[in-house]
Image (cartoon, rainbow, N blue to C red):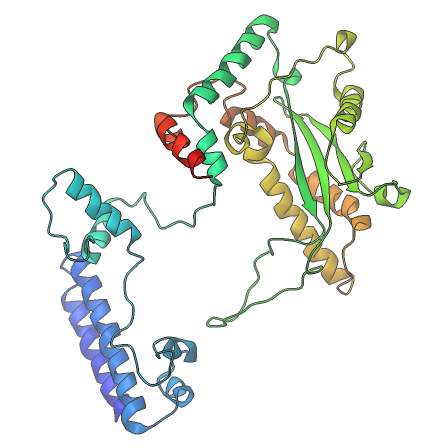
Length: 383
């Protein structure tokens, strides 16, 4: 009986939506939410009156079992009155506060302090260039350090040096280090069945060892072979097997680069990229602290694609070797494969252009990109 009622409700709702197809988008959305609520109430009535289990009801109405269970109370004795419709209220609360602060007339819910769900759908329809995105987390250190004064000082120093020496693109290099772990932190996407709660894949281990890679690229798109720093006391020849051509391999006690290793890297850099330098004059311009995600060309366009390609190589390695554990002895070969795929001239040139280093563009960032000095001091005072 309940199944027939549900079918009738769906048919009636479908006719209503067709009848409202000439009306505005908001009315159709409201009708779709009403359909979901009516269908939900019929299903819950079937469970209560017929005495069926959740699993049996899910099979009868062709609804995922997990969808029904999430409306059950934690104690299992009662059901939520209605499904949770709509998006998270953070943006709607922000809109309400903006309207109140600027004395804009509105019909929002003053009791809840939220803009209406119909306003949200109308706003998204009027501004198709805005979509719901998954943001990337940024530490408070990076937010507080990216202030206009510090960035302008960096560009001023860079301008002074370039006006004095008039560097060409092939003589402007960016060097940076990044951690390379033996366990992939991001697994590649796979195809799986709809409704499945978990879709798993094999990892090399719970925790891996981190190897430091020092990379360098010029504004013209030339890459210097990387340096790999292993967390050990002695270097073994097997660590270098099938690694990037011309790469330098070394080790340190804690696995991080230090002043001695940086001098060693400079010798490696001179050998591969600066043979034309007279008397080894190398001019350095340092970036402001915690601004590399905006001003570091390698951070902007290279490291993320490199690690994604490396993790794909990890996945292929696990499949082809019968899921053998990846160790630090395998990293150089797998990194070489990823490096060959990702180290393109386009990424290098784009990184320097996006960061405003070459061509020199001190106006690369707008006022909205910077953290105000007041906010920066507020972040620092809470530490």
